[in-house]
Image 1 (tube, rainbow, N blue to C red):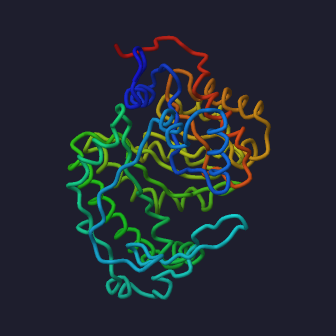
Image 2 (image 1 turned 135 degrees about the vertical axis):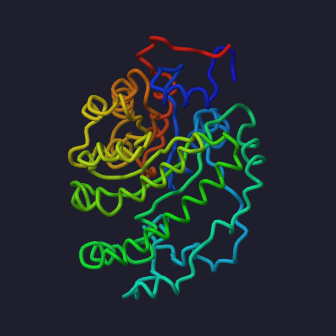
Image 3 (image 1 turned 180 degrees about the vertical axis):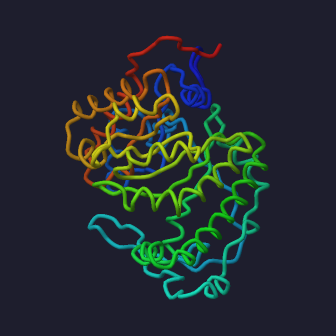
Length: 366
C-alpha cells in the first residue's frame, strides 16, 4: 500500500459506511471473465506492459473470497453436496455447466425429503480459515467475503425450475420443506465460518435470482410469503457475527428492493440496468441512504458491444450516481462474456481506478 492510499479493506468499509474514499472500490462479485475473453484480455494486459493478468487484477480488486476446506464424502465428478449433477454444454468457444440431474425431481410427498441425503455443515474444516484469510491479506488488507447462501436457487436446483414454481402454487408444503432444510444448512455453515474467522470476514454473499429481463419471476406477494422469511432468518444469523450481507439477484427487481431492505440486506449486487425498470438514479434516490450497491456495468450491451469511450461514460455515470456520498462498489453486472473486446474490459477497470469526481470528506490512511 502506498503512502496516503487506503487498503482495500478500509476502502470497502468506508464505502459501505456511506463515506467517499480515495477511489471507488472495485470487485468481481458473482462474476469473472469467460473464455476466450479472459485469454484475449490477458494478452492485451501483457501487451501494455502491465505484467500478467493475475497481478493486474490483484492491483485493482478490493474483495477476495475465502472458504473452508471441504472434508466430506467423496463427490462424483460433476456432482455437488446437494446431489445436483451438471455437465458442460458448449456455447461454441467455451461451455457452461448445466444441470442434467435434479435429485428431488421425483418427490411427491414429504417422505421423499426425509429419505434424501442432505449435506451437513460438518463436511467442512473451518480450522483452515485463519490461515487462508492471512494469505488473502498478503500484500495488503483485503475485504474478505464468503459465499454462497442461495436458498431458493439451491432448492430448485434439486427440484427443477418449473416444478419448484408449481410447488409454490399447488404444493407449498413440499417447497417450504426443501427451503427450510437448505436454510438450516446455510445458517449453521455461515455461523461456523464466521466464528472461526473471528471478525475477519466482512461480507457474506447470499443470492436468489428473483427477477428476469422484464420484471419479477413471481408475484411480489408470493416472494414475500414463501422466500423472504428464509432470508430474514439467514441474514439475522450473519449479522449476529458482525458481517454484512451482500445479496445477488439479476433482472428487473425494482419492485422488490424495499422488501430486500426489510429482510436486512446491506448490499444489493448485480444491478442489471438493461432489465426493465432498473434505473441507477432512481435506486440511489429511493434507497441510497439505507442500502449500498455493487456491480452495474452492463455485460449485455456496453461491455460486449460498446466502444471504450462508451464504457468509460457508463462507468463514470455509475460512479457519479451510485457512488455519491459512498455506498457503491463498481464491477460488471455478471460474468464478462466471450466476444467482449479486451479494450472495453480495460476501459472499465482503468476508468474506475482513475475517475472519482467527489472528493468531499475523503479520508486516507497515514
